[in-house]
Image (tube, rainbow over all chains, first blue to last red; front, side, top):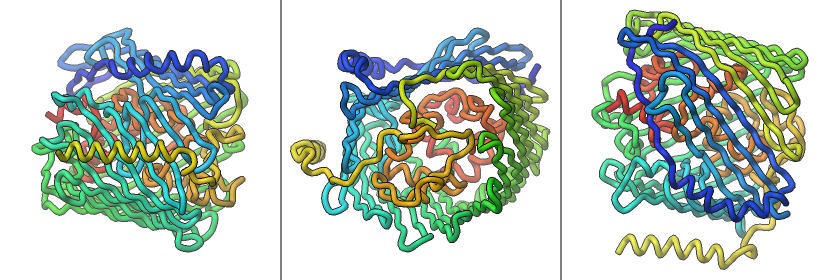
Length: 438
Length: 157
């Protein structure tokens, strides 16, 4: 039994007609060649959850069933062409968890050609793309290749997958590209451009990006990227990192990040990032450092610090320190870890301490896991100063391709006096080849 | 007029790339579409156990891809210069396990049996996000800013 102090909100439900169109478009081309695919893998993850919520004096019982399906077919028609898809769907067997009894999304469905040289590739369909300034899901095409003298070029274009909410009268579109130079083992520098036609605070989205990876000598690496918002004519975002690995067991990094709300969030479609939800005149500058040290084989200690400063004298300045340890055992099949973090903030409402411990155990075909997390807020939230979250999991490899497992979750937090949630998981994986997926 | 010019530039670049075709492509080897061997173990794999050189495809040392805390927290910087090396081991849909568009199930709920993974939003994150959002909203924006997230819109009107 649980008590929810907040409100329950409907979740969005929409149908991606364009995704269906892509599948219908691709299927005729795929069917004759799938039988000749040398390498097919399919993965199904089924989750059945159960939890209860008390809101406004009424008790609701939720039992959603989620199915996540992904597949990859390499070597279509005996060529370096592959087809990949990923998607999920939900069916509620209890009260509605969203705005309807069902929901779903086609995350990707695309054909890919990988050329044997120059890292050249082509994609057609719906895919998740990270390329320079772009980190998008688009329905379209992507072409990339290295060419002569260490230079390379990529172009992409199509319709953004979030087009259903930008909804311009003339339709949305997205295109861009990247030009880069790479010297093996020493440098890669790129300049990229992205333009998305949509309704972004009265403008299209126009971004120019720069990305950098340098390894000037041995153990030193410099990596970063910056984004110039051409729609607001300002540098919107930058993040740089110096990474040092003086010995194989040490990975030390120091970084800097800065962004301006007005310019970085101009392309936001989520009102949480727009005025009046936030003060859009603010700017954030962050300095952070992380030390990752394998003190002895299989035991890694992590030490981290982060300082956040806001230009506007409102709220948000904070310093975070963290210490963690991870021990891997059972031939790397299992791990145990402990961590602690302290956040000191300019306002007590942002300050808290966090402690976490976990361990897994995988004897033979069994797998057990326990994860415990607690947060101690400096200032009570809804009258509660401490939050607890514990997840216990047990699983069994029923067949080589089928694993069954279940989780029981206990939560006590400012939202819940006491909450128990259950999850049953069935993981099915099969394929005609070895290698690849981790 | 400007729109026509831009479309003309894009069309020209694509056409030039297609006309140049395979002859323009560098002859250096690509990243294999899949890692040739099954990668064993449940916890993270360290490329350096087998590779001490530079990836012929990604053109960076394998040591750069050691999945340390630094790498995991900054993997986006690497992936924006190319996804192929990642996909060779993780599979093409791996990224979307977290970077989805309308995701309803949190990654750490789906992978409750994998507490060893550095998955975001553990615990009752609907409470915790108020604190993180006030301090560093940019860390939220990368995944949630440009998404059709009706759940966010319910509160953030």
